[in-house]
Structures are given as C-alpha cells and as structure tokens.
Image 1 (tube, rainbow, N blue to C red):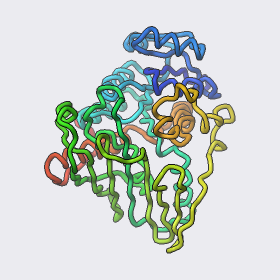
Image 2 (image 1 turned 90 degrees about the vertical axis):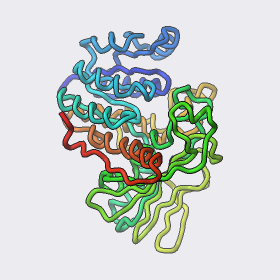
Image 3 (image 1 turned 90 degrees about the horizontal axis):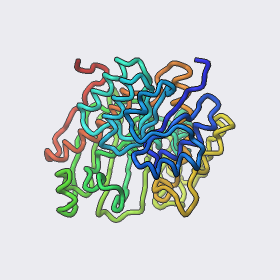
Length: 370
C-alpha cells in the first residue's frame, strides 16, 4: 500500500484526541469526522480544520474516500458500528470494550473474516509507558519467570453519560485484563468471579447488576500462571487507578499505591522506587509529541485526562499500530481474536458473579460459529 490511509473518526468527545495524531501521521490522512450533534460537530471540525463532516454514521460509511473508521461512540453501539463499518469495506479501530455480549464478539470476529479488513481494539493500557517499560523488564530477564499477575481498575463513574449508570463492573474490564494477559503471553481460558458489596437500587435497576466490586481469578491457556482482576465503578471509595502488578522469581513490579507516589521494583526482597521512561522514540517524529500532551487545555480536559493522566501516553502508539497494520497488510497487535478474548473475560466474569462464583469458560474465537 503506497497511499496514505484515509481515516474518519466517529464520536468526538474522547475521539477528538486522535484528530491531530492522524493529521500529523506520515502514513495517514484525517478526511472526515462524525458526530450526531451538528453544533458539536462543527465546533470540533472547525477547530481542527476537518473539511468533511457527517451527522449520520451510515452516510459516512458510504463515502468511498474513507479507508478506515476509528470508532469512539458509546459502548452499547460498538458492535453495531463496528460490523456496519466492516461490511462497508472499511478497516476498523474501536475504543474499548469490543462489545457487550459474547454473541456480539462472535459476530465481529466473523465480520472481520468475511470482510478481509483489519480490526483493532484501541486498548490504552498496553501502550502506556508503564506497560511498555515492564514489558521490557520481562523481555530482558529482569522480572525472571512470571509467577502471578494482578490487574485492577477502580473508578467512580458518577457524572458520566447515562449509559454508564449501574454498568456491571466487569463489563468494562479490559484496562485491567489486557496488561496481565499480554505480559503472560496468553489468552484466557476460564474465569471465576465473586461479586461484593451493593450499589444503590436505582443504579442496580439499569442492568440488573447489584455489585459494587467484582473480583475474578483467571485461568490462562496452556500456562501455569494465574491472574487476578478487580473492578469497581460506583460507591467504592478509592482514588482513580488503572494498575497492574507482575510477580516474578527475580523481581516484582508493583504499581504505586497513590498517584505520584512512585512505582516500585522489588529485586529479590529489596524494594526501590523507579522512574518510568517515555517511549516517544518508538514513534514517527511527527506524532511523538502526543505521548505527553493531548488536544484539550486544562479548562476543557476530557475525563480521560482528569481521571486517567492521559492514558499513559498511549494514544499515538495505538494510532500508529493501527495505521501501520493497514500499510503493512498484517493483523494489528490487538486484533479481533485478542480483543474478543479480553472483552469476554469481563463478560464471563460478571456471569460467574451472578451465578455465585461458578467457573465460566470463554468461547474459542479461533473457531467462530457460522
């Protein structure tokens, strides 16, 4: 492929973060944006000089000049929008999670195969500077043999858009699931999960999910390593944290207890605080600056920056991987099978919690029902 990948972005809240990245990427061109509100659409498109604008997602998909769509729409629409784009002959990048049901995950995997197009789930944590640093520590032998992995994501979602209210904690678990599975080099096979505590009745009524916290043990495929995942969304007092910890026989990386306290590397029995470097040098020079800044100022910062420190500099890394997978005609790092497995950990974990902690096996997305 010699021409630039022509990208459209659907959803301009968090999605606006990626406009200047695609505009600056040497192998991409940002050609269109889509937002239901004409006022918001024009405001964002005017700010970034985007010429082509759509309030209709279906109309945008009919545009022959668009090669790929980056979806940042509300969670309940991810599967519908992903499948529609694939069927329209577009490559797809989609924010997390992939879908909300196992059936939707299967349908997306099938649509990818039938379309021959690329699909990437835009999971931020596995492109964060913390993750990239620890991945290097595993690769160079510093950690040694991995013995256990833990992921956690605690976040108070009061005040977020209405569809978040009462969402089962594990239905948005990929930020905690993805780092541990990637470091283990494996996919999940089955999960056991316990629900704990209770949320207010009005929150519970939305999805029928009563738990304040869901905590899961994950069995990995062909591995003697286990993983623990904890997730909360409402009425659980804790500073925001997306974290992972990896225990090795030579060293253990432990996520900081409070933001700014510093991550710790235990070498043997000796702990020391460590500085995590940035990884902008792995990116084209044109987009490297976006590891340390977003498009919003302090007054108008998106919630991902207010609560999540900008996702650890991950945004340009994700966009670069997606674009290069198309240019190089290869599967993205977080392809449809990986995305379906990571998303299904949460879906199956919640099912386990609702069934009193029964073990639930994940589908094998290597073979999708026809």
